[in-house]
Length: 477
Ligand SMILES: Cc1cc2nc3c(=O)[nH]c(=O)nc-3n(C[C@H](O)[C@H](O)[C@H](O)COP(=O)(O)OP(=O)(O)OC[C@H]3O[C@@H](n4cnc5c(N)ncnc54)[C@H](O)[C@@H]3O)c2cc1C
Image (cartoon, rainbow, N blue to C red; front, side, top):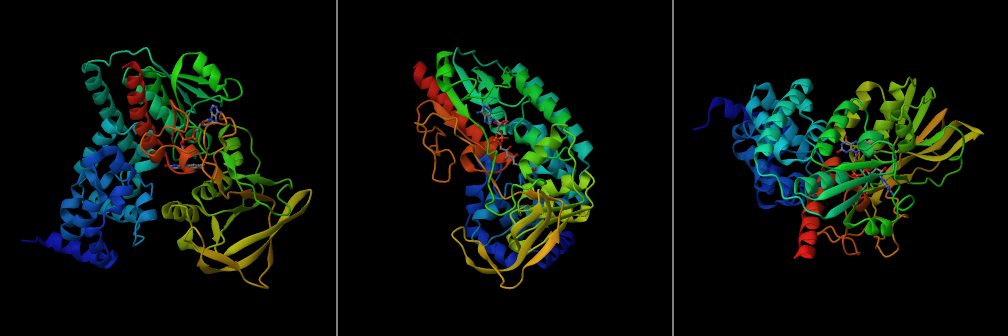
């Protein structure tokens, strides 16, 4: 028999969620098939099953650890035939769960994260976001710390992996590279990470805002990676300071490429070379490198992704008076996470939708930007509706700084020419083995997918580590 609480919850959900739509989920499962966490955790996490239970028995979901294991990569939403924002549905349930004081469910999830998800401190902060459901971030991190101590005691008790003489070179110290290196090191292989920048961490250090990922948490996680035996050499640009041939001569038996997507897309528009026009990644990198960055008073950010939102918030924090994001489509098409957009607006960032830049104006230095209003037309080749300029709608807006955040791509010119790239310039890999077109060279993360998320890079790293182990064992045997 249903309890009153269950009936109330069902009734509340009927009002908030389109439960009729959710019933189609019973026969689908694309969310689970595309989910990074399902890939990483196997039977421990199944979003399709969770959606089904939200319709049939929502109370049982409130006490389920699975509810807290969505890592917000939005792959499910991108592939869902009904375009359901599954992570948002889970957030709603998480919030109800937390309000009802159901903390055991989240704590069970944290245990799974510490035991099975590489880089648990980082992923808790930048992927799982328990604080969005009202949990206290400080207490959550203390719990992760406690669980991590218990986990490391358990690991020490287990028989240490037999040390192998095989050496693996990992190019890039972002989440993909760090995952490959730590997984291999735990399995007894020698992993050396080569990083071009002075400090390891990739985008985690270079661009993710400090309030989302405090650098002392990043440093601590990297220390844990070094503690399992990984060697990190910074300030080494592979392809310039060290060639692939050098790596082979130095006795590395396999190579992993995890060099990310750091090349800012160029905007072909009059005025992009004016002083005061900057690329978002360069801007964020300068801010996080402790360079004194001066921002203007009136800032315009062009773009609609998470990078645009992070750049806008950072500019506001640095003292800009007015920060406006211009996005050529509507709010519904905006690629940035909806909660990032909401938080940015609450912090004071303005967003103008259906506006496209035409040219940047100024004499030597930017002083204004000319734009047109747009309307949504037919879907383009990506399936998103085109932004069509409205005739006679041109207008000018003053700006003393323009931040371009129109996308990033992998920069793979340093690779040997024999390694095949995809048409869009990303790195081709066999999707099962993560091996490139050159034997013994594997790759993963943003270099392969284009800009994605930390959890996707970690997943790729874990998958590649498995393949590298098989490859090295096949060489031995
Ligand atoms: C502003 C911003 C905010 C973001 N916020 C989030 C977020 O909140 N949550 C989330 O999940 N994701 C977020 N992301 C995305 C996430 O950071 C990336 O998807 C992830 O870091 C990709 O990991 P990776 O290991 O593939 O590459 P990266 O993290 O980019 O690391 C690649 C590393 O390789 C190094 N390298 C490159 N070429 C060479 C070479 N030739 N030799 C040696 N080293 C080299 C680079 O210096 C870099 O350190 C954000 C991205 C940006 C830009």
